[in-house]
Structures are given as C-alpha cells and as structure tokens.
Image (tube, rainbow, N blue to C red):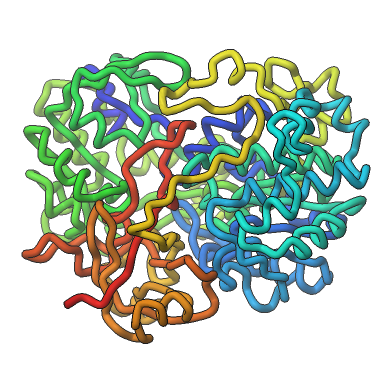
Length: 605
C-alpha cells in the first residue's frame, strides 16, 4: 500500500504505533534508542544463568505468549518461564490481576492500582538510597542527573519524600511489602521488566523512564542477567536470543509528500483539517483528508473512544478497505476490496522481534475465493488504471526470491521444506558494550550517558504539544472522576489476537468475554456473578456479563480488548467493546493511553 501511494504522488504515512508508541518516543531521550522495545534486550539464557530476582511490572501473562506479529515459528515464552521457575529465581508480579503471571512461576503478587507503577519504583529507589545501597560509582560513571532525581526522591526539592509510606496509599500495596521488596533488590543481580501495557496510560512515559533509573540506581545495567527490558509478558519471542538478519520487506520509495501523523491522532486529523499541532519538537498542520485507504488493521478496534472515531470516519468522501472479513471497519467503508488470506497465496515470513529464528514459506493451499486478490495484485491493478509504470515488475515467485535474498541461500530447498533455520542467535546482554567501553560505545544521547535527567527535554519541555514532560521521571497523579470510580484495564484475550478471530465462535470457547470485578465492588452495587451489566462513562456504554472474582484488585475492573464494535438502536455497544470507553487523547509523549480509563457499572434497567 505504501509502495503504491508513494508512487502516485504521496500520502499521509503513520508515525509510531499503538503497541508501544509512548516508549518509542520517550526512550531515545533517556538511552538514545528504542531498540529494547523490539527484542534487543538481555536474552533469556543470560537471565536464567545470572538473575537472582525478576520483577515484572505489568506481569508475564502467558496468553500473550501465544501470539507474535505475523505468527510464531516457536512458542517460546512458556518454555523460558518454566526454566525460570525450575531455577528457583524469585519472580514478583506487579499487576492489578493475579493471572498476569502463570501459577507455575509461584510469583509473589503485588496487586497494584493501575498506573501507579512510577510511585512504587520511586519508593523502591528511596529505600535503596537511604540504606546506602545505591551504586554511586555506576551513577557517577554512566549516568547524568542522578543528583536531581535524588533530591526529588528524598523530598529535598518538593518537601515530599517518596518513601514506602508515601507510596502505599497511592499504589494500594502495604508499606511493609514495598520495604521488603526494596531490601530483596539491594545487592542482588536484579532484572526489571515493564509490559507494553503500563506505557499505554496517562503519563505512560514515566514508569519506563523510572524503571531505567531504578535499574541504574541498583547498578545492574549492562550486567549479565541484570538491568531492564520491556515487553516480556506482552508477546511471544521478546528477549529470545535473536539473529541479526533483516525480515522480508517490499522496497518502498520515499514519500514525495514527506508527511506523516502519529497514529494516535487519526481522529484529530480527520476532524480538524488545517489545524496546527505539535509533534516531536515541531509544529505541523493536519492535512485535509478526502480519501482513506486502509489495509492490515481494524481501526474500529485499535483506536479509542469509538463514538468519536465513528464521527471522524464519516468526514472523508471515500473510505476504501482491503479486508478478508466483514469487520466493523469493512462495514463502515464505502468500498471493500476482498484480499486473500495466507491460505490463498504464496508468501514468506520471518517472525518479528526474535519470536523465532526461522523463515517460513507459506505455501498456497487453495485458489482465491470469489473475487479475492493479493494486496500486491490489487495495487498493481490500481496502478495500471492510473497509468503508473513499474509498480509491479516481478512475478510472485520472483518477489519471494527477492524478499529472501539476504536471508535464504537455497530458495528451492526452502520452498520445498517450508522452513529454514536462520543463523544461530546471540546470547545478548543489553548495553554491555556501552558499560564495558563507554569511550568507544557511548549511549546515543546528547551526553553519551544514560540521562536520568534529560538535557533535551529540559531544553524543550513540551516536545509533543500535549503538556510538559518533566526532565526527570516524576509521579504525576491521574485525574479521577467520582462519577466513574472504577479503573478499567483491557488485557488481551486468549481467544483472539487483538480483534482478529472475534468472528470465529469456535475460538471464543477458549476465553469468554466478561468484565472481571472484585467481590467488594460487586457487593456495593448489588451485582452478582453472571449478570449482564452495563459498563459506562461519558464516552459510551457497553453491555457484557460480569465475573465476580478476587483475582482482580479492588477498585479495578477488567475487560478483554478486541471485541468487535456493534451498536444497538439505543447507541450502546452490545459486544463488550472496551475501546468504546477508552479516551481518545494522546499522552504527552504523543501516543495512546488506552489504560487511562475510569468507568461505573450497573445492572441495566
């Protein structure tokens, strides 16, 4: 699609993504790269060999390990986690739901209030500092700005010490348990990981920044089995040892318009053509979009505040969608171009982010159904009608050979076998070079060091035009509406990948759609297990059965994301679609805060 539109004169491209966009825009300010989001973390073999305590902010949900972008050649997450359990390495699950760690890990559960991870990390750092357990030589040699953060943590700069006593009422975790965890981290080879979910929230840049700062305070960065990483519990293959081989990708020319917007601002763009907005330190103008052509996604799932998005979606003159199913996006399109599934074409694939060191030949199993065509054939036919030459100058077989030219030595053998193992992966330790040889391998930040205090953010505190970002990691409370006192979290379902497969009832048996609610919260509202309830706020209302369980923290409710959006005659959703309720606003780092959502629940009349 990008190849086609860039050949026609250009189009509005995307910047960032829905998965880890907040961290993508924040991490370069702190460590000079966001490669730790794409699997370039300390690998599992190093963790198993050297780690003494493993702390998972956002958990290690096993169901998430069943999926990977484009598929998984090997389902490895459970394998690694079972080895972690067999080694007897203590695991701490910091999450609103107990099930965010598998039972076999025997993890200690700290049932934290959502979006208060930064407060907990600050309290852990406070304990390390007052006990003299912080690594002063590491902080002096490899970081800048610790003294500014230290003054904030100890309360010298604002009069509030960020102690366990301070953090306990914020996080919902008892003071004694915070103190105990801090003491267990002191002097140990520790590994801190944050799921993607905790940066998809109000001020979601802060916990990622503070996790790096806490790992630096403990002196663990660059050591085998120590330091920090992201996404361990978010999808299969993160932190696998991975080969440094490129994945197959069509060659794409430069966009003649040189124009893109953050994915979090699609509705803003459609509703406000010509309006100015700030992004990454510069002022831009929203284009006036008359045509949208969408492929490879379901924005009526992965965008938020869907009533607002529906209004925005009606502004362009024409919506074209390449689809294989009758998704909500297809239902709200003007033209649906039926695209082939992987069963109806030949293709190649290498799993993303270290999900498997394999290349897969996906052999066509059936002829295209009805009028379905490959996406490349759809774009080639459109190019021919527009008089564009050279869009597609190869046969399918020639393209597949070209795509694997740097990966596969013997294409015919690969095609016949269907699978090729890529070169043996490395057992990586993140940032080992930067710590071992900082003169030759500095961090790619202005200072060449880990920026606990960001020089660039201090120079431009509002780089995204969405509110100032402090120059050190900071606890910023989230506004709470007393009319909607329950915090909604939206984990993945075992029955689908985001919204994929929600039209397949056989898979729904694996995980029913319901809203989880703590017994105390249910009793206060006269709600009993199994009732159909209405979950609502000012953005919308959805109907869904309730499950009353103590496996979710008090004050927290949980709806599995991905249910297909469907409104009844009263304008309420009937499928339990969580993104009807989530707010369509960007975090100050320019991405999507899905988990910044408060609701109320009642039995509908």
